[in-house]
Image (cartoon, rainbow over all chains, first blue to last red; front, side, top):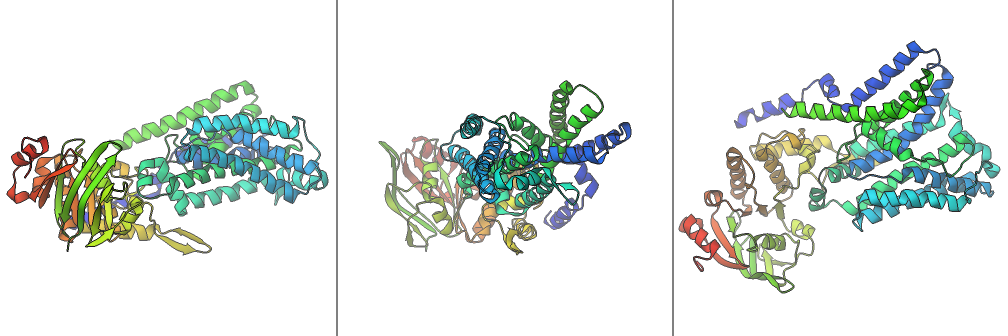
Length: 332
Length: 246
């Protein structure tokens, strides 16, 4: 038996690329998104216009950036319901500071710092006090939005002091014909993918999601790592908050309301497993893309937007059902 | 020289005496079957050796040197590795990643230190080959058989220069064929001078592989004798208390 070991090992390493791809939920979701885009290009003369593309890519970038952070949290076996409120708090922080005349290089770092603080509080309560992530971040969902209201006295802010135009350019402008949020997304997605796959941080994150007890026993600093994951997620929400202010040109405390649901949907459609241990950065982006294409296509095809929820919801269930089916088959 | 010597180890949890006055010596390469009924103190003893609990009284010597463990990592540095009952394995990771869990190999990549997957795969393939196990480094663990999972957990102990391996019920929930595979792995460790403490309820497994059998009853060591000089009947008697001590 022992002389065949090398042969057996050899066999498994030469599965072809296509069969590996076909085994990925992300691949099928990506295919669905591409097919939807193709169909829309043929069926409508409005989809493939530069203007619509610009809008689609910018809209989906916001959800996708946060979905990167959410995927990290979900892969570690947790959940972060507070991202939508963190978007609002970060946006309001940058808005309030800049409207009072402070420059952009004070406003943005301050907003990101506040967001990181939100994540740190979440993380410490979850990792050190041992409270369930769902409860802690549900509480934070309420607290962070309330703080945004207190900070701004719940008024709308649309004047951002001396660096007004710079902030608007950052979120609403374009570089080389690409919307800035999309460029930020591309950079962050590559960065997150790198972290997941090639760093010990990423490896440990997935280990915790797979078997937290095992991670503890093998000496992985589980608590510190969990705090860092929630800080990461909150930072992604914070970055999105800053970009969204620039895009909208004004901010109210309603910003990012119920956004956590789209973000979780994007992560799950992209292959993140709510039981922990599974998820990819690319999947998060593709999941967000599919949701935005569905949304956009309903509008362009003249279907009532009331149907949006039904379509997105159906896709969540289909994506997960597909994954179940695939696992059941490969377990035979 | 002994690999591990416990002198008069006691452990109290409040008024409960989980272990009282346990003295035990294990030689390099020796396989000791640690037996006893539920609550006899087996797990507590293992946790004391592994550095999870500090003993209330008594001393631990490794290679005749007195040691004190405050955390599991202290024990690990002293050459003690534990194969946990549930194997402490992450199903979503590959076999190689599991072997290196918590001590991943890294290499320099520009300004970053990145994980050296190729190195980890090569090294774990080597370990599996040494263990004569048909385990593929790239495969995800959740598809593996019980025996292969054991090989992953045992390969982990070979990464460092382990001198003592503690195994908690490694054969409790696996098939007959896989039990044989695990016992083979235990013999491999023993042949390479590594002392093995095997906790098990399964009398046939213990008799097949152990040089010495130690029996705990209500926190006391009631027997520590060569397996060849004993019998399953005697050990059963010692475990239940039908035989006072041997």
